[in-house]
Image (cartoon, rainbow, N blue to C red; front, top):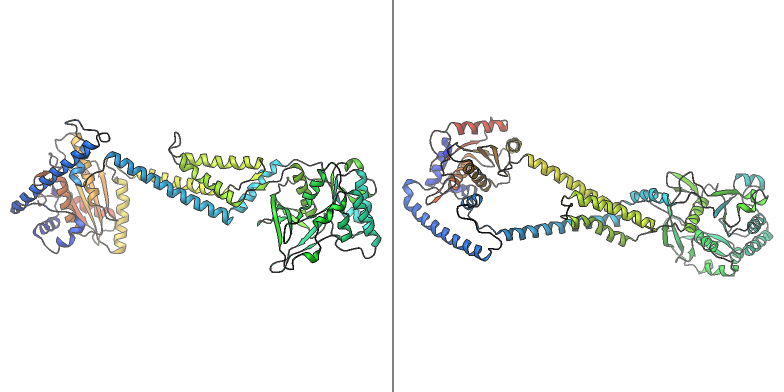
Length: 637
């Protein structure tokens, strides 16, 4: 092998051979095993050759034992057809090579470990997203969009009796005398309504018309299917919660009580209805739920059963909390769909006939109350009366949606995000994106199927984790394609494009940090050998460069068909010369042991170190190329 024209490299190699402490002893760890026999060291070389023969014999005996014991895994090679890559591996790296079965087993274990770690990371992320409710607004918006398709255009079983502006013009401003409400209840009873809900605050007895309270209680009792509201008062903590109940005389006459509490989500939309709630315990059913239960009966029961729902205020805990349970989600129809409204004045004066009320559940209330408006999907605000009417319609349809518990959400989400790892490798699913897309489709279909079945599974945590996986897979595929474009397909080293990119980066880094940088070029000189021998020699050079350039900032590259490069980050000129000497020993062999470069294709080298005048990587490459071309004498052996 020849080092072209670089006298300093030859001097350093000679210093290594003669034991110069400044250039040799202090750099053995960087250069590796760089022992080259010279003419005046034949006695030392002879002993080393003898030891090498003994070592090679023991190594061959060990390989023979391994091959005989594992003949099922490593097939025997035919004489004269030895694998050149195996010869190259033995000449470059004398460490024992695991068998093919062992390599498969190790690769399988590595693949299983990687999948397990990925599954654990995905599971932890999806549990964190589920428990923290970070994606709750997205899930709520998706629920509103999907659940709206399950809502019927209008439920004819519900009618709202509105104490509106027209009614107040005819009968006076609110509050009305209780005898007017009694007449309204009697009109609804005569029209054949199935149940009546008075969503009116009737907590105090009438001071100016005590007989009106008695008339209203009698009308409620005659109807037998009237539900009165329990209005919760939920001040900010730490103030205790309270509840406003109707007057005691009205409670005794009513068929039941129901709370009008509607839970508001973090986005401000009232889409959750607790089917039971109360102070200290969930003692009262929801107002809409109580009406739906009465509407589903064939016959009306006596009003004497109603006091069971109401405990006297004196029995409530002094610091009671408002407790909710059995919460369901309420779909909302679009803005054009509205439950039928009729004027209370029209019912009282007969303008609204019995045919518009018969067989329906009537809700009586004030839709224009300024303090009783709630947000609905789509940016709308609805009166609390309309929200209760919508809840009643959904309960009568059986269209209330049960939200999945958090534990079940997390478990199902874990199964969905780990599904791609289980499917990966199946026929048609060998690319990572394919099982990811399948998992996304399964998540969407499962969410829709559960919604049709009356349950809501928030899919956004699982979809977000799968999207992260898809993005990571896309980035990995892009980097793989980019790396493939920067890699020589024959040797696996960096190609010219990859070398130029890394060279410029290395020069900038070295100049910024004032660190040394060296470039070693190796060229296969044209000879009479066959193309197969040239390919074997190129593979040998690539393996030797890969073995010697293992630093964190080193790079082995194939810059063209017959030229290779080793970029040695942090290496000064004498260190690079030691690396060149070791590379020579790897390729040209040692006394008694031939190397892959002894078959008629000599090699030559060029060496250059970064100088102050080198502003770009091209400057360093140019000086190394000049050194390669200007060789005049063989490299010291």
